[in-house]
Image 1 (tube, rainbow, N blue to C red):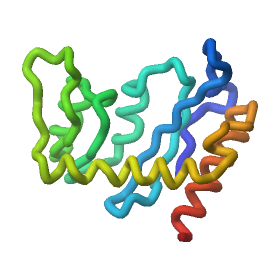
Image 2: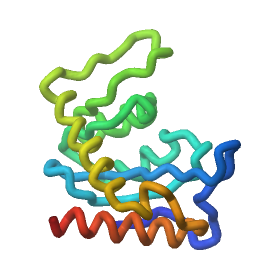
Image 3: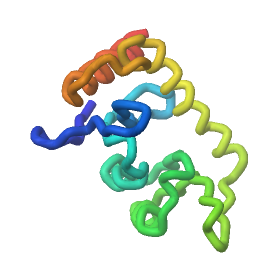
Image 4: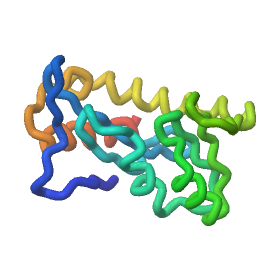
Length: 146
């Protein structure tokens, strides 16, 4: 597992609701975690899309609408990948993924549900990004072992 934060950067953002953090994860075909990254809660998902997919080639990456972007799709096509990413509603020409591939995206959602069974991850008790990432990594390890 790999953390994608520089040591001096803070990954816990502030909003009206308090401290927020987004967990970005890449999972394998069985729903086990391969890579983690944190961003501030107010940041867009697409910012880490290229980082999470930079060593993927010859696969069918599955992702949410937040990762739909022309540069990412071009990059994946150049690496012989068939991206299964639903189009954003604002896209003029929507790209509809194949239904049988789109149903596999539930593995990612199931992974996040398993991750949130860990109380410290679900309630975000940690105030520092490094401590929160450590708890996410520990929860990811327990998912691999289960």
